[in-house]
Length: 435
View 1 (cartoon, rainbow, N blue to C red):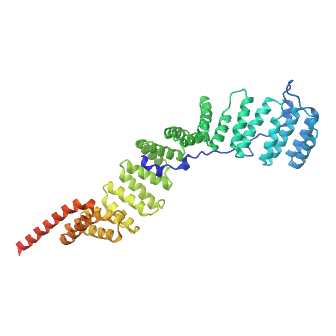
View 2 (cartoon, rainbow, N blue to C red):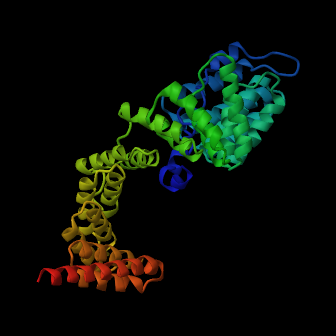
View 3 (spheres, one colour):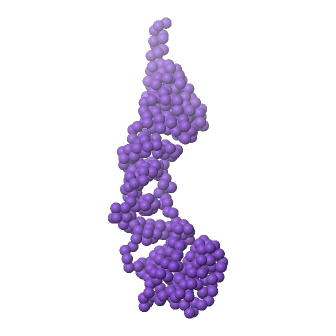
């Protein structure tokens, strides 16, 4: 059903719903007592001395009590003695600066402080790793996507353990925002594979991102595959509708019909575009009556606008379903909302098919009076046939003579002219015979 692509594929459906890190949830709060109790003591990493610990603890308490300015002032006092401090102590000092600025929603100052943490040489590997990852998260929240991947690259050089799904998700989000879609896809797919390898359900927003990336890379089959998974895992209306639309994009109309029918049965078809889409899918699959009733229901409830095009869709669908009387009703409504005569011409043809010749002639004349965008040869043909059946031979001949002037109707009009003139002569001969 590719010809409906522009109608049924909505780009908004395929925009990744990426939730950027919240300023209140990025970095866990620091507990200095825990740090002090569990500090790494090796030859390469100096210890946190008691006097520095006491000063940092005082600054922390002030900040925790809401006395931010006093906490900053206490850290400033410590910084003035930086020359006498070891790398680990300096790192912890800047770490506290970073947390205070972070809690004040000052990302720029927080990042500057955390950068100074990792700039120190002799610090625990765990501190360097956690700070670099926090910097990547902060850069993401600040919209600095290239910085995110740079921080993660630095993190990767230090890290010696298997990467977690959080690493791959953050990297994928940054690459997506930087429009590096293939690299982003590789990362989010890795995160999903890690979760599934542990028999865990991937997070919904991971699959949303993966689906968006496949769509951006013009891989509709893979989009459909992801949506099939999302339908099974989360059963949300939008995923059913998106899957149906993707089946249409892939030319799998039978699957599209089945999915959208299932969505309808679950009460998921509630919005105007989705009702129109379902009606089009019904019509394309030969279910003209269901197409008409679906659109008519939307019109009746006010969900679908009462426009000439929507009314004409119902009329055409009823006509294909051999419900001519219903089709006539809706073509008549459409014609009243249209300045040109196209729908009046359709009415004339329908009336002819139902041997309603007076009505056919009236509709054909109405169409000619309004004018038709695509020419009026067919309308003259319809008028001529109606007048012939009403035995208005002169009017019929005049209509066919007008139709004969048009190249595309010339052959048919000429045939009818000969026939009507012959019938007119026969009628006159019969009348004379009875005199």
